[in-house]
Length: 345
Image (cartoon, rainbow, N blue to C red; front, top):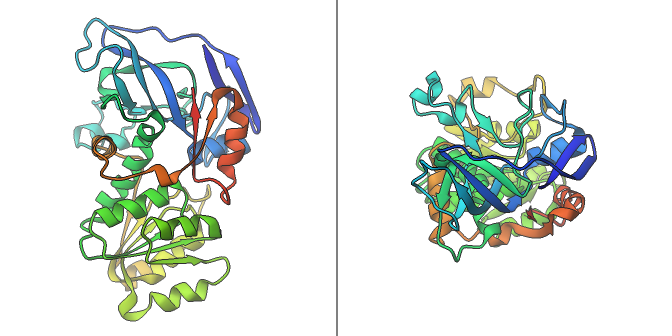
């Protein structure tokens, strides 16, 4: 079968790889669409994602949808022909994190398209993958595959909202208007936020943020003072969600959130130690909370997409065939023209 394979920095090839087999509790999924995530972009353009370095050829991709092609003899949840969202993680179910319900923190998880372990965990930018029955989330047959592939990034946004606590009537700042930040902004409004501020260093995604509901959108590369002026005193935010992976954006969150407020860090910061004004956490009695992937929010994300509760189509800016994956990655990196770029397979 055909697959998109990254061999190292800017070395992407469409290759033939072995097709997966199916055990009795497994499902073979014919992949139809996959979104390019920031981690995929890092793997391709840098040969690494933070501390995770490509040491062998890696199939990227973990935001995928498809249809059931084959099921094992013991599978009952889905059947051939079903349209499904695919959860990219397969937790062990046995470690301390799994036992306490934090499967996203599983120490033995298999997660599509990650070089965090060696041998690497191969991803889903290929014609078919084998998954456990539990990873399959069936949906109505009329839901478009590219829309359905938003389940994973939307689940991360929903996990950030969950970590932030109740947003009803809250003033919320989201820094970084990439796809995850944009989805978080949209989800925060659905969760009851009364005011939404968005920041980025590029104008084009900020204009999109205004279209999907931001009350204030500020290009901090051009006019950081405008942000501080708008969010000082009574205008301070209750919750700040950092989705850019920028240390300066995290600083903004810590400085602009009100005393006693909540800061949620979901963007991947540069590898190594990052200097932040930690005394603000102490002096303002802030809650600083991390976000890593998602947990039960994947079910919620699939439900939101299936029922049309959140229209993610404004975030979808390009769809490319697998054979033109290199162009898809180039487009995904260009933040002036792209938000979420999909590969159809």
